[in-house]
Length: 577
Image (cartoon, rainbow, N blue to C red; front, side, top):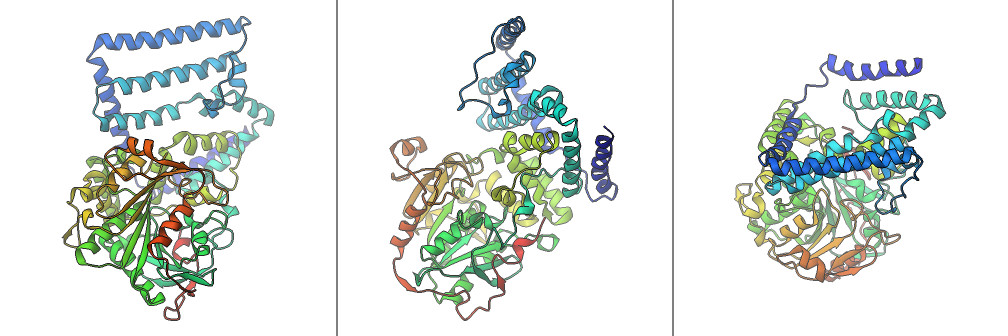
């Protein structure tokens, strides 16, 4: 207890000291206010129909009475309920004590019943779909936070663990809590991986290459060839600036970059700067001109080839689509084919992140960015974690701070915790023009003085979505695909936003679907699509080779024209938020 009190003082100090020095500014309560308003609308719908509300209350009461009666029978000697099938079991309640001990079994079932009942209220309320989606999201946050598995006194596994260790687990957990609050400079930054086990350029982001160009916004990496011949048409990868590029180069076994190099492609990757107050005025047009256009110029100088194929991942894909529409207006044909990885161009069905994109919340974000010139990387990291709160927040709270167990090393989660900041002008443009206004597919987006039209983009497109994506939902990507004016190959991969993309053919975990042309109905497309086991990577490579099969002798980084500045993965990627 003495050690626990001592560590709790460190937690308090880690929280208070940055605020005393005003390193942590008071945050607005826009999300909480929006949650109260949204769930208030659900309640209002039920209170306007007293008869319907009485039925709902009676349903919950009946279930709870039945549960109480069953618990009483258990305490009188009745057998425990059978375990749930593995495919439906909630892993938060996987410990056998949750079923073997009647009191905790009651807590588990009461929580499940109440959560399901609340979800039913949302589904059956007379709401527009936008409000219903927000209500589902906020309810998921509440039910995730209130689970009895999250609290020492109501979690039998934690109680057993604490008694066995004499409370040492709580001391370790409190120590980690203090460290994580200090790491977040006064805000909690939950550790999800042992980040000390991975080092850029050593055991992750280690594909050989050179930085051949650098400006204020990006470094351009050209990777060293691994084949004697390469395809004439180089490949430019435009990653998101919301995260760092090396998700595509985690380690040799998972690296899309290395695999593409091994297929005979001359691979260039943009590594975006981690912006600070100096980049406050860098907007979407800046990222187009100083990012993609600057990269195309450098590629031409390095390879002597003006004809390029490009990949855009997530928001990097949105930028690529916007750039292609602008280039089409200007008659710029340097990008001859394009690939999109889980990238949205139409934002009507933009998923749970749209919860944060109403006028009031965007105005609040803009006010915060105006003060410092950028959005803190932790804001985006927290938003992504909230998409899967049980897996990405509460499981780590329990494991780290209550069980006192440091997380294991995992390269993907190390990358996930390596957050980046957003420049004010760029992020405001993105939120208002995409999430709030959906202006690109409406033909209303203006960039560089030009009104953009995706229908003018006639280059062949390979458009990859993933089936369980919460960031760029498959249906949203499907809808956006219909606005391009050229040949379109829409492909649906299994899993989600990252795992569905990083699915190498050496050891594939998921399948993909392809075949039909994009039409009006995603469900009809999926019903007619052909399912293929394994990675989609070879399918994409065949598509690339069919576009431009000509080969030339392998090219070294810089091509003897651009002087390499440093080894991959470069310097910008090493800057921490």
